Picture: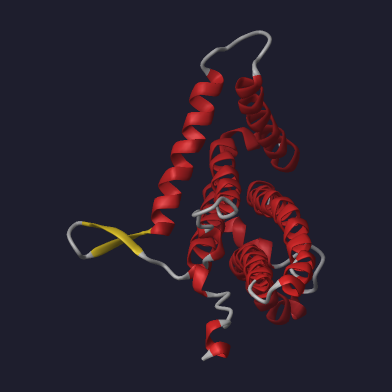
Length: 251
């Protein structure tokens, strides 16, 4: 019984719980959906109240809103080119939806919806489908030459074309799994070491002393998770820009 009491359920934090229903009982509204709504409201509030003053010397909130805007805008222009201006709203929304989704999981009672592969997979699929549609819209049937790089002998095409197609489609998997795995792994580590602190703390004076080590590791891990949360959102956004660059320029 004692062993059962100290069992660490590190994966239980990713379980979805219904907090309401939409259209009766046919569609469940989970804490993941609730966090998405909260994140959307926070992003809109940041942009609305940040841009509202329009001061020549911006305050903190306006400076933050302008920094977010300028950072994403430059990323689109540098990676895609001048054509990146038309894709800026999409990349901006995607970047901050993922960034806030990563960060809200580090807030007490928060939930990182990016730790679910269903969410990251849907975002990755959206990116790849958009890039494909853009490429077909701009280049038409010439888009399919993307799967046969210039200079490759035609007799190698039966080998090269399937490899290129698989590589192109694997973008969905790489984008989705990279974000999902990084966020899930970090939260599992935090859960495990937090459980160690509780277990050691329940063992008396010696346990309190031993609990200092996992507690210190939690502080380090939390700082590292903040970095990973920002980095993974940036990686997802910049890879989206690179894929859009390929779609626009067919490189």
